[in-house]
Image 1 (cartoon, rainbow, N blue to C red):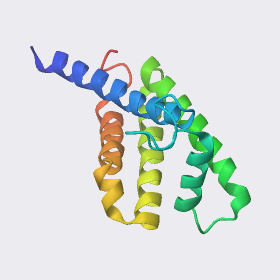
Image 2: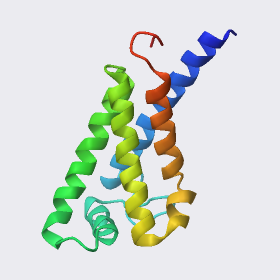
Image 3: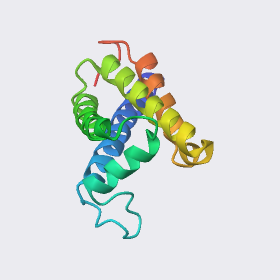
Length: 142
C-alpha cells in the first residue's frame, strides 16, 4: 500500500471514529445505550446529561445550562454529519477540535485532569486538529 492510499485510509478512519464518538455521546443522552445507572452508560437521559453539564459549568447561572446542553448536542450532530459527508472537511475537523478542546478544558477545570485524560478527550481534540492539518481540500480524496 502506498503512502497516499494509507493517508486516505487514516483520514477516513479519523472521520468515522470522531463522528461515531459524537453520535454515541448524543445517543447516550437519549437513552440509546440504556437507562441512567446501567453499565457503561454515562448519562442515559438528557436530564442526567444536563446535570453533568451543570457540574462542568458550576460557575454559570443554572438557566444557561440547558442552552449549553442543547448547543453541545446539536453541535455534535452537525459536526458528525460534516465529518461523515466530508464536505468542507477541514472546517468540520477544526470545529470538532475546538468543541472537544472546550469539553476537555471544562472537564479539567471542574473535575481535574484525570477524567479528561482517561476519556481521551484531549487526544480526540488533537486528532481532530491533525485531521484538519492533514486534509487540504481536494488534495486528499474522500
